[in-house]
Amino acid sequence: MTLATFGGSPALSHPIVYRWPKVTEESERLVLNQLHSGQLSIYDRSGVVAQFEEAFRQYHDARFALITSSGTAALHSAYYAVGLGPGDEVLCPTYTFFATAMPLFQLGALPVLVDCRTDGTFDAALAEDLITERTRAIVVTHMWGLPCDMNQITQLCAKYNIVLIEDCSHAHGATWGSQPVGTFGEAAAWSLQTQKIIAAGEGGILVTNSREVYDKAQLLGHFNKRAIQEMDRFNPYYRYAATGLGLKYRAHPLGIAFALGQLPMLRQWIACKQEAASRITSIMSALPGVIPLNMSDKNRTSAYYALVFRVDQEQSGVSRDLLVDAIHAEGFHDIDIPKATSPLHGLTAFTDPISPVFQYDRPSLRAPSYPLADRIAANSFKVSVPCEGVDDEDENRFISALGVVVGKIAFEWSTLGGRGL
Image (cartoon, rainbow, N blue to C red; front, side):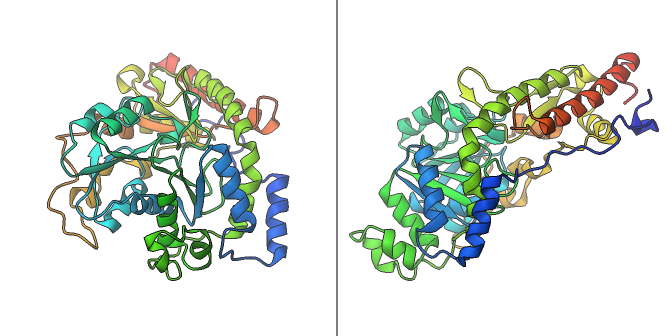
């Protein structure tokens, strides 16, 4: 039973990947209805835009929701709306996708990078050591759908009177305690990009309980009809509603119609993902030194945007890259090394920060090193987590295929002590 990476026959006759997003009958119906309505642009808060915002707002028991063209645009809107500007410092995770921090440069605010905890979440204790007289905000990312420790983070923000923004782009439906992520701070943003749990192809959404944040976010990217109708007429910025501030962050109605059909499934999907993640983790436990990173626990429910595993090479005897190559060779292709989430402290934008509106006089990198983020990035891989439930044929086919591949590799591993990889 030679491994395919060494010339043997693959364990699977056809390559396996997990197809996402799911095209539900409701999503298809809503997209076709929107297409035939002739409304391929929506200029105000009406139609599917209003329906999605209202449903998303209610899901999070929030006062306001604002659809944008991307999660990045939602974050930019949030940063502007909470008042960040030139010279302000924002504590930001280094272990995140770079879009979490990049909009800050457009405002002249400076992201100050913070290392993560062993599970990849924001480390509030390390963040406290980096607070200065310029620190105005903290942004946290619930990486891979695993909520950060919101007790520690909200306490830190209260202690120093710091604004909290949550990047929930991986974490639709995740909870800390019984509270949904995205409801702990001044504003939160979600991506609706095609790989996200609720997908519009491209899109994003901002949620807030602050009327001021809601109005200013509209002013930034939803000029004219929407801002004129929705903004508080007594807001001193209302006189700019017709023109906005030069950006357009409207989303495409066909994408929002598709996402609207998915949203009623979110609670069921998150519940099903818990079982699927347990099954996948059980399968992967056959491989020594392969450790799950973002599992749910008694304090939090992970949304499992993906299930991430770290390879401890001392225990396993093989590197992450060799293991992933072996799994790919056997025909299971839904294993990925997440290079796009390489730590920010290795990117030029953060080693030598620049802004189109401000000349920085301080660095983004204040810590001597970021060892935990580096270790996770160097040794982790991710796998999709199905959401259909244990009785679904597609889910069982996907997880069974993983079991066949891992079983073959584990057998060779035990026979050769890892040397066969």
